[in-house]
Length: 56
Image (cartoon, rainbow, N blue to C red; front, side):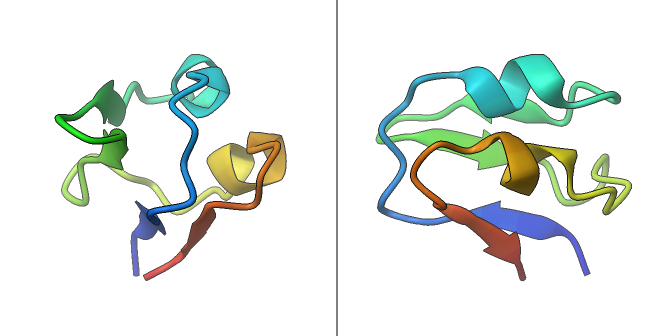
């Protein structure tokens, strides 16, 4: 199951820079993960400074 970014996201962009398949982009309210592109590696979750990313 793809990872998701929750409402605690502070839009710092560290997850987008860490994603090896560029599945993360800036959304209207916070960054978002394209579930179809996510390879479920968890790199984004490990990089998030506020713990806003979890497995969906």
